Image 1 (cartoon, helix red, strand yellow):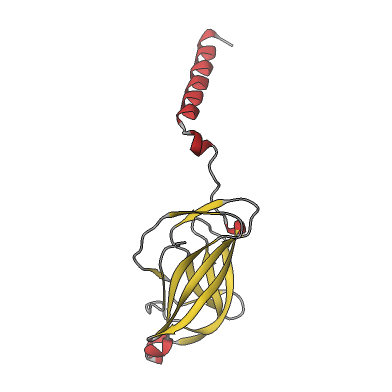
Image 2 (image 1 turned 135 degrees about the horizontal axis):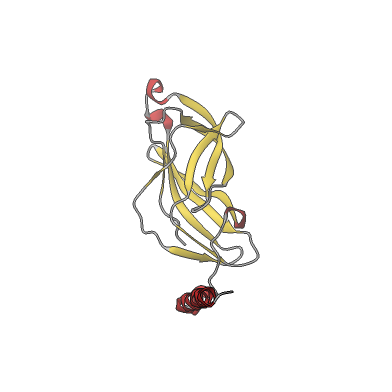
Length: 168
């Protein structure tokens, strides 16, 4: 190695150590993000409301350690026995987004509203049988499936599902 390359390697190493030292100790020992494999999804607290059903999409930590999550789950109806999306994905209702740390077996809930498709003319809605909900954990591209037989609107211009952010 030449004197110049040794100096470059030394400077790069010093910068890496300085950058690592700038990270707070709490971040170095941070709890990991809850990936899809760490969380189980379920539909709970379901009840009727005027023209819709309300409940919670529950994400439960099924891993052996704590993890964190935040934000909105992605939710849509699926059907045809093969996971084909039925209609428009859920819209996100306003709410406060917070970071939630979940110990093993703890859960966070996202309130969900599913509109009764009979509220829309059949010619607009295009009613279609639904097998369940596809749920994306915040920050994940892998989906969960919650069995839930109902009817959705195949028309993607009709909003039938809305969710709020996860909360404890």
